[in-house]
Length: 93
Image 1 (spheres, rainbow, N blue to C red):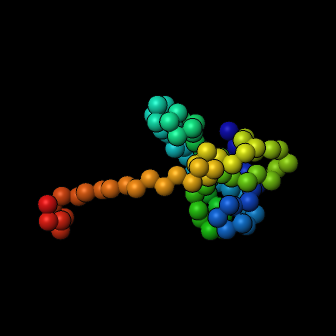
Image 2: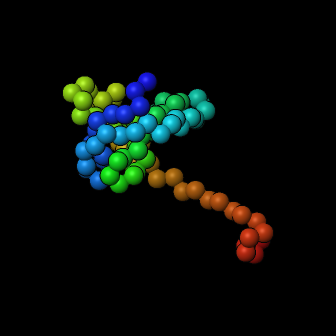
Image 3: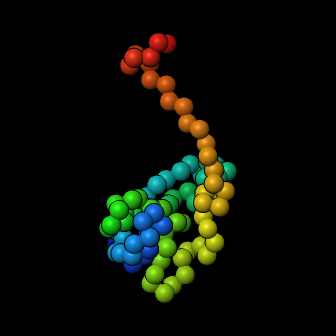
């Protein structure tokens, strides 16, 4: 797998050579519910240092992006509230 890709960052809109940072892995059943692949490659922007998933990376190499439509996450604008409770760290519970 290539370790660098020429792309445009969807966060800062700068063009640069993105570095492969690793993989984000989801359990298959969770990924299927979210309409995402179970393994998503992660890339780092050389300008703003954002971590961008392969599904959201705007490739400039002349080849089409892996999915020619917006990612499932971007298209649905999912906003899931996350609640984290840490007991024994200043909480009254």
